[in-house]
Length: 115
Image (cartoon, rainbow, N blue to C red):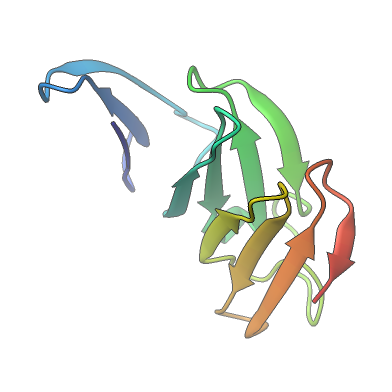
């Protein structure tokens, strides 16, 4: 199980019995908001105040970044993204609800497909 919190370490990992295994993300994940465990064996996390969504391995290695770290965008991805989810075809949907009040759709490779 993975928990996302607003202090270090931001990601906490527990086994099925609730035993703490590890934590990671210090210094990179600043403002925990949404987390999604994809069927592709990756985690998707909203780093809200950094205006980005990250696709990471279960160990915390970043494999895809959506948005520009530290740069809010008006009427474009992102301005404090709040949540993230995956469609069955691998498309990534992001709720950008604080500054933009929009839903953005990306391909599995990170190409912006629409808002």
